[in-house]
Image 1: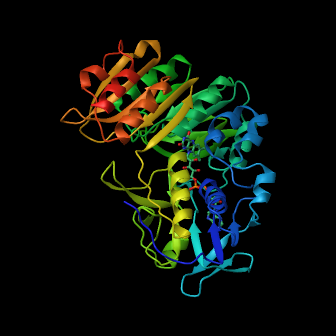
Image 2 (image 1 turned 180 degrees about the vertical axis):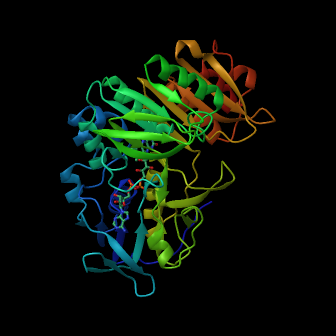
Image 3 (image 1 turned 135 degrees about the horizontal axis):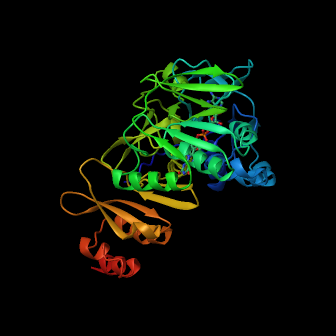
Length: 419
Ligand SMILES: Cc1cc2nc3c(=O)[nH]c(=O)nc-3n(C[C@H](O)[C@H](O)[C@H](O)COP(=O)(O)OP(=O)(O)OC[C@H]3O[C@@H](n4cnc5c(N)ncnc54)[C@H](O)[C@@H]3O)c2cc1C
């Protein structure tokens, strides 16, 4: 399905948010031949960068920092952007087509992209800026955390999601005493089946990380040079510092204040259009119908930010644009590469291809009629491409063949695609 509208090229495009989606949209606009004015406004001081390395390589190796930026400085300059780092848009006027910045500036625009991303969810009752309590979203957060990765230090990670676990793995590698505290009954509660979460918990335990599940946290108090994490059941855990990693909140306030439709994020159509003419949104701040899942979702992932930004940039120029993706996500932890295709929807039945003991396997999620709906590949990235091709083609392979680890997956998929 293409969404194409006939409209002249705008004279001026404003991109609010100079993160992954904002930076990618700017490059796409120029790549599509747009020669008009592009203003890229970013609240951070850094030019657009990718966040995945922040909880991985950047924590352990300062030398990896230059590799996180979306574009080399010369390419960035070649885009001929009016780039305003360290500038926050405080007000957007859709009728007058002007944006106001917190420092008193005004930016007129013909079309505007909201790429405002998200921010960390704060732990209720803990004052912002409390000593020895950290969050992780921005490069500066990762730099501050890196300073604390000193062998022998005690860290408590609140939240057993991908980000918290990636941090825990790096901290352990660096020789810290690490405890992961998860309120739910399993790690990765929203993102992976229990079959995998239980296995992963064992891997963390084997690496020396303590994992507490079903552990409700009541608060954090200063204690000596560090902190005490207080549990709902009355217990306490002393630590030198805490990383709070309990999810993200989309930055929708600008959109909300100018009356745009919000539905767990700024609601956009498949081309990235919001409910207001000439305003688009992409990335972590946006929610969109996902055809594979059959519902509107807001997915915080590198893949979505990249694709939605590319699509919205094309749509802003009146070109065919349609975001139609099977969700894909990756994570690196404890020296393992994890890749996921689809999401673990309720009602799926999970089966393993390969041996979990060997540390290289895939978990397949089948629906009631044995259709493959979800894949989690552990150190098995080579399985992903053929499976993506299969599902993107709307085809299926027989379940018993998929589960037969003795048969090369590429062959199984090749046959299924040809059938
Ligand atoms: C630590 C970490 C690790 C991750 N690891 C993975 C991974 O392994 N795999 C994966 O697929 N995904 C991962 N992700 C998710 C992925 O990085 C995000 O989905 C992606 O960065 C979203 O891009 P975005 O441009 O929408 O938002 P962002 O990159 O957050 O950019 C938004 C920018 O907008 C700015 N902004 C907000 N409001 C305003 C305003 N009013 N005026 C001006 N500027 C504003 C913000 O300061 C920010 O710089 C990770 C995310 C984090 C935080």
